[in-house]
Amino acid sequence: MDLLFVSAGCVAGCAVSDSLASGGFYLVDPSCRGRGVGTELWQARLLYLADRNLGITAVPSRIEPNSRKGFAQVSFYVAEYEGVPIREKITTSDVPGVDVETFRASDMGNLTAYDAKIHTVPRERVISVWVSQAGATTLVARRGPHVVGYGCLLQLPGDRYSLSPVYADDPETGDMLLNKLLVLTPSQSVINLGIIENNAIGQQLVSTHQFHCSIRLARLYNKHDVSLPLQKVYAFSCPGVGLL
Ligand SMILES: CC(C)(COP(=O)(O)OP(=O)(O)OC[C@H]1O[C@@H](n2cnc3c(N)ncnc32)[C@H](O)[C@@H]1OP(=O)(O)O)[C@@H](O)C(=O)NCCC(=O)NCCS
Image (cartoon, rainbow, N blue to C red; front, top):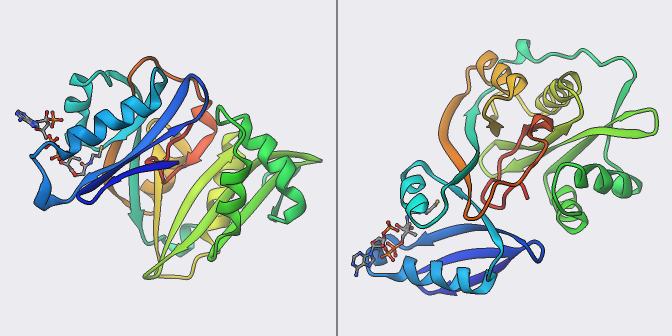
């Protein structure tokens, strides 16, 4: 991810491949807004990314302005939720034939291969940074030798935890990973997670625990939609960087 900085704001653009890019962090200091800084940053990013199909994640107030700027293709919506889990409602049942273990360094190859089936590009560097950061716990689900899902929990400042990402091949494994990660959090801690709209397991979880939706974000593209197996995405909380 390359950052194009001016003192008053920032924007990021990542050339994922020759034909695809992902952007985020479009932000101008409130004291400098309305003076063209954002527009300049925006143009600089487009120039840098050339003809690539660019995916960005928009807050509600930017969906319409972005559409006018050519980001008319709405790919999917992510609802960001937060709340304190109701402990007695965290389920502990296992899925027959699926083993869940804490990530070990020797899992990296299999985990990266699994992740590449969900994202459009191999993400070994992203994953290795993500799972090894302080306060991170990663669970890997396997059916026999095959990875069938994984999920990450990250401790944030102030007794908060982010559940992201949680990927699984089937709803039962997705549900199990979500609950096994929730149970690892201390009681009274606040959980943040993003649910792809229409993901029934995620919706059920946030409704069971009475989490509230803080914002609904839209994934937009300026050329065409990108096909991703969204049914395997059970939690995703950093859409600024994007599902690629
Ligand atoms: C969105 C944001 C980055 C824009 O930055 P900015 O420096 O205020 O942007 P500009 O001054 O270049 O332009 C603001 C608007 O005025 C318009 N404008 C700029 N100069 C203009 C001029 N001389 N005459 C007429 N219109 C002008 C731009 O077209 C732009 O319209 P848009 O909202 O449809 O894009 C800024 O408002 C922000 O940080 N918002 C909070 C964070 C956020 O929402 N980020 C986006 C996440 S998706």
